[in-house]
Length: 275
Image (cartoon, rainbow, N blue to C red; front, top):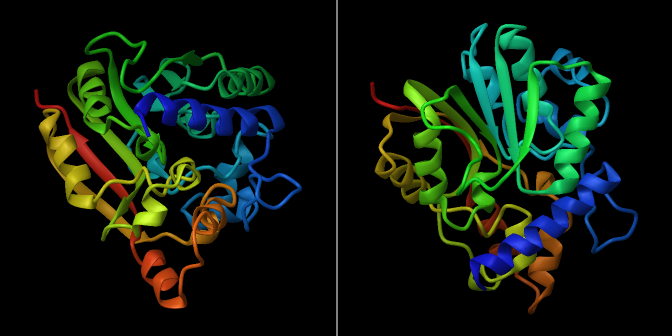
């Protein structure tokens, strides 16, 4: 499948989530996962205080980690949130940068941008703005941000190398990047790898761990390090992506399913743009 086709389908799925304000739909085979947003967020590292600090509807349980917790965001800094969705991490970052700082959220899905802007208005956030754009062509000036965060989004980008090159471009010298994302410890079964449902659910778009880290280094980043790594439950994948992906061909054996589940890791990666 071409990169342009993947983007259209990803945009359609996340546009639907943006319109409905939920990653769960009432019919099986549509977009209903097995865990509510609050449970997902708690299990991937968000506190009750953080979940209660954002406007209702900003947390849809779409992440795979909490990059804000490890980003060491300081008052007065400019933070860029790649794939900001309805604004959950952007609003948490806004509380840390304070009134003298600024947060920019970028998302390619118009429905998510609209929802994030509505949430910003509900919460009276004057230091947050949301811009439509793609991660491979960021609507952000060169050398203009102090910190980049991203939560389970770059795995959806077909050209990850270009996304990291853009992140490098917009960071100030000495700026830092903290990403939560899904990577693979072993190659996926061919029938899963070719599934667009699996791609939209962040599974098939995930790169092998070493290739992912190499893409960050090749963009120019220094001090690339995995700060945390853990197994990622299939229950937290967006939608029924697992079921739909495996149902597209013959059923997988129990051994295959267990091996597949062990293939996915959630990692938090920190990197620095050299001075």
